[in-house]
Image (cartoon, rainbow, N blue to C red; front, side, top):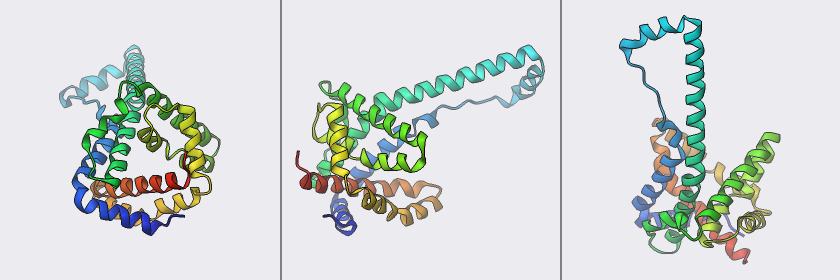
Amino acid sequence: MWTRKELKDRAKAVLKTTYWKAFLASLILTMVGGGGSFFSFDLDSGDLGDSIFQAARPEALAGIIVLAVGAALTAAVVGILISVFVGGPLEVGVQKFFLGNQQEAGNLNDLGGGFAKESYLKVVTAMFLRSLYILLWSLLFVIPGIVMGYAYQMVPYILADNPGMDSKEALARSRAMTEGHKWNMFVLDLSFLGWAFLGLLTFGIGILFLMPYVLSTRAELYLRLKRSNPA
């Protein structure tokens, strides 16, 4: 059995010598995870009056609505595609780095591990299914969605540890590994809330510096669960 203190102490010990590499890895994941924020629309202030005037005409208003809806849909589709084909594999690569970092000096080359030609499509499929299942459960009620989020939390670590594993097997293994541990995993996440709150006081910048600690702790959790649940 694992304890929060053991996981956190191990994470802090590792980060004493590898923090900045871990920070870079977590920063890259955060930037891609928030990729949708890079899509923005700017209005030239000199054209604002003309835009309002044109919008008063019904035919112009209809055109603006169509363009706005089209732009929103395009941005949403692009965001989903980036999340599926880039975000998922990148998350696997980042977790591969953190797994390696918990056992020896982390290698930033591992960040591309999820994009390996021979396993890329399997990684994309598994990560997509994980997100889809969590979403579907969340649509029923919030709590089932949270439970399934913890049930599938180990999927990227499993894929990082077992390149080319079939998506169904990765999902099933994550459920098996987290069986009986979900509540403790939830409490583990709650234990970071104090630091997260302090990070928010710095306009969210502090959260970026907290992420290596969180990801290192979760990587250590996976290694403990793996030892107690050998394949």
